[in-house]
Every structure is written in structure tokens, then in C-alpha cells.
Image 1: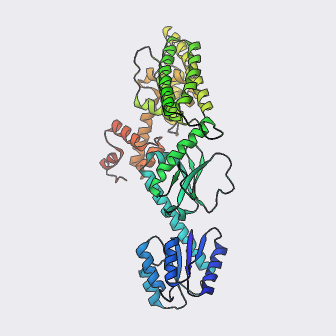
Image 2: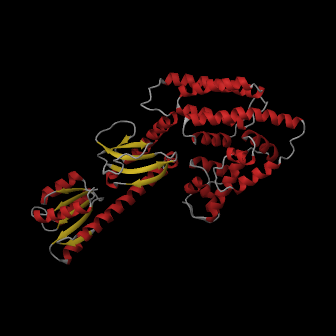
Image 3: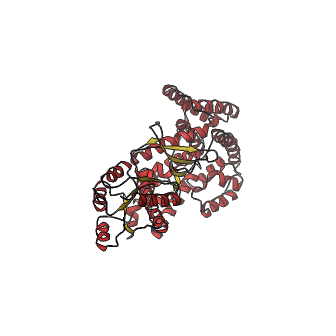
Length: 469
């Protein structure tokens, strides 16, 4: 936070500066002199708070106050005077001063004023961030905690700011005066926005409206670094080579589906390793997309039909499942377990069904009960399968045979019913409800809700006489 002190008496200026420095060691406090010089220095510094003497030669406090409010309405101004005159106080407050103090200003008064401005700056920062984030669903899904540190820096669009992620223990300067704010992401990574001297590319920005773009860029870079457990800078990859690798991976995926259908377990296991190697060359985003697609195909049961139709819900669920894995080794291990184990499970299931031994499985009733009673909207197929002691692919196949819909579709309907209840029974914002029922992507939630109930969430509320946000 930047504070300027203007008074034509040097002793008074120094007294106020010394008191402020003792009270707030991390704030920047400037002696700007008095009169016209003070006005010019304040204009240059662009402080958050100014303490102004009411009577000064050349240009008095009232004139400087009027000048500041014309050029920057954001600056908080406190008038200080040795004269207990109501007219001065009235005029300064009319012109926008936040307070009027008599000399000598004591520590308690100064402390209360600075703390009040700090709180207002923090509130303004959070309000602006909320507006920016509301326009970018991707950013809203990323940011789970925000902790302002030096809100003043946020409003100075002359300085460069940089987004940094820290995946180890917090650094020693984690709460230095150069930090605007700290945050925690959906992946559990800690980050901060810091002041920097120049544009270093990537996650740098000056204008507040560029924050979301810079955050998304640096977030993806951090996720990729953590995901592949890179120790240093990632080697530059040729976009053409990445594209070629992605095409090879898609072709290999089709071959793996054929092997899985034919029960070629050894060939599938070998191809899966080759597919993993190819995905690493394709890059992080293409890797996630491909893994989500393979799991979606597996979830549809690897039926014998030539064309497998993938529902939007299934693709969304498995894309989200893939994104929840923090490292590539973790994701590879999970895919191997589900894919290879799933092929064996399906083969055993088909044999049972040929012998008419399937019937209504008792564990299916337990699985349905778990889904309905679980308060977590992100309850997973894996967790339910583990609870009833069957393979996830077996659960998905039987689930669809007995209920007419797969697990993901069933879960989607439950989420939407929860959303409908929250829309009717609470005054929460619609985007908050979307997140609460498991949809960080608000546009997607809106689309699913309208498809299910014929009205968008806001239209649904209005139809029940509830004012929408």
C-alpha cells in the first residue's frame, strides 16, 4: 500500500511518517513536501491514501483534494489541520475526503484509517476478481482459494505482475510486500501474483483484464510440469511432430479397441505401452483428450457393434476423471488397471451371461443405494465399484443392462435433480449451485439442465416466482 504525507511543516510530516512507519512496516510511505510539489508527487506516485494539511502555501489541501478527485477517484484522502473549524471539515468531506483529523494526529487515529483503507482495497480487489472470474468459467473452476496480501499493487496498471506457482514448501518471500495475492487451485497447487520489473512473457500482465488469460496460461504450464514431473525447463516441441504423434495415438487407440473386443489381452497390453509413449510426444492437452476418449469407449462396454456411440455425459465424466490425476505415472497406472482388468472382467461377465448365471446382481442394489445416498456429487464409478467389490467395467455394463442407462447417465440425472432442489430451496447463485453439484463448467451445466428440464436454470427459477441472479 502506498501512502503520501503532505504538510508545509517538515516536523509535522516527519512525525506522521515516523508513526506510520512504526505501525505499518510493510507499507510504502512517501514524503511529498507541500503545495504544487506535493500535487505533482502524488500524481506520480499514485498512492492509495494521502494525508493532506489543510493550509499550505502555493496550493492548499482543499485545492489538492479537488485536483486528486478529478484525476483519480480511487485515492483515499484524509485532511489534517491544526484548526478546529467546521467549515474546513464540511468542505473537505463534500469534496470526497474520507476523514478530517486535528493535529497532532495520534497513532490510534492513523492506525484506524490505514486499516480501514486496507480493508476497502482488499474488498475492491475481491469484487473485481469475482467479476473477472465470472466471465471466464475456466478460471472460476481453477481458483479455489484467494488470499489478498497487498491489494494496492492490483490497482496500479503501470507495473508488471507475474503469476508464479510453487509446488514445494513456500519460499521465504512468500508474504513479501511485492506479492499482490496468493491462491490455491483445484489441483491443490499454491500460487501467487507478484510485482515484477518487466514483461517476462508467459504469465505476466499489467492490465487487470489480462489476469484471467495470464492465469490460464501459467496454470496449464504448471499442470504440465507437475504432471510429467519435469525437473527443469521443458524442451521445445515441434507442433508438427506433436500433431503427427496425436494422429498415431488415435490410430493406435482404434487398434486397441479391436484387440479388446477380440479378447487379445497380450496384444492389448503391448499396444497400451506403445500408446502411452506416443501420447507423451503428443503433449499434455492431447494426452488428456485421448485418455478420456479411451476410457469413454471402455465405459460403453466395448460392444461387438462396429460403431460405438459416445454420449456427451460419458465424455464429460471421463475427461474430468483424467484431469483429476496429478501425475502421468499415476494416470498410466490407473488406466492399465481399469483397461486390462476391464477386458478380463467383460470376458468373465459374458461367460456368466451365456450360462444364464447373471440375473439381478445383489451388489447392484447396493451400488444404487450408495449413489443415491452419497452427498458427494463427484462420486466416481471406481469408488462405487470398489465398495461393492466388482470391476468398474462390470459395474458399468450391468448398470446399463438393469437400469437402461450407464452409471454416468444415472449420476448426471442425480446431479441435475440436486441442482433443481437447490434452485428452488436456496438463494445461492446459479454458478455456485453448478459447482456444488459437480459442474465447474457453468455453460455445460446450463446446457444439461435445459436439456433435462426444458428450461435454463434462470428460467426455471423465474417460472417458480424466484428472482434469478
